[in-house]
Length: 278
Image (tube, rainbow, N blue to C red; front, side):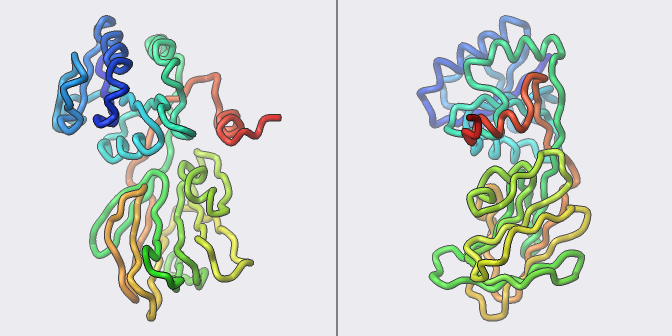
C-alpha cells in the first residue's frame, strides 16, 4: 500500500489543520497522497492533485466526512473497485469504520495487513436512456406535488405490486440503514445480494417493504394519470419521469469495497449507531 487517495469536503475549512497533520503523517512514512483537482482549495498541502483517481492507480481511498461524503467519493471511483476507508466527521456515520481519532492506529493496522476487504453490491439505474449508479438507494419521489403517485413495480417483467404512495425506495443492504430504515424498511446484512423495496407513506397501510434478490431486473412504471416524479440516486436528482415512463434497476457490474478491521462487525456498529445497547 504505497498510494493513498483522500476525499473530503473542500468547503469545510475547519478540517484543514487536522487533515494536513494526517497527510503529513502519511508522507513521513513514505506514502504518496492524491486528491482530485475539484477539491483543491489552497488549504491542503503535500498532496498530488489529479483529474481522477484512475490516473494514480491508488491502493486505498481515505474519506473524511459523514455518509454523504462517502457516497460522493463512491461516485468518483465507479467501476474502479478501489477500497474505501471512512473516517467519520458527521453525525451517525454508518459507512465509516473509524472515527477521526483512530487515524494513526488505522494506518498502522493497514501497514501490518490487519484488515479485511468487505465487498458490497451497488445498483445501476436506467431512466430515459441515462445510466447511473448508487451505493445506498435509488428512489422515485413525488417531489413538490401534493398528490400521491401511482407506481407499478415489476420483477423480471412480472407485476409484483401496484403502489399508491409518496414514492418508493429501492435500497441496497448498505443503504438499508439510511432513508429506507427511516421509511420503515428492514436492516439488511451488508453482504446480502438483495434489495429492499420500501414504500414512502403508502396509501395501503398493510403494504410493507419487500426484500428481493437482485439477480433479476426490477422495473418501476409511472402510472397513467401520475404527475411528474423525480428519480434520485444517493441524494442526487438524476431526472424526472412522466406518466407511463419507466425506471429500470439492476445489480451493478462492479462492487463497492470497504476496508474493515477485525475488531468491528456490522452488528456491533449497528448497536452503537442506533443506541441499541442497554
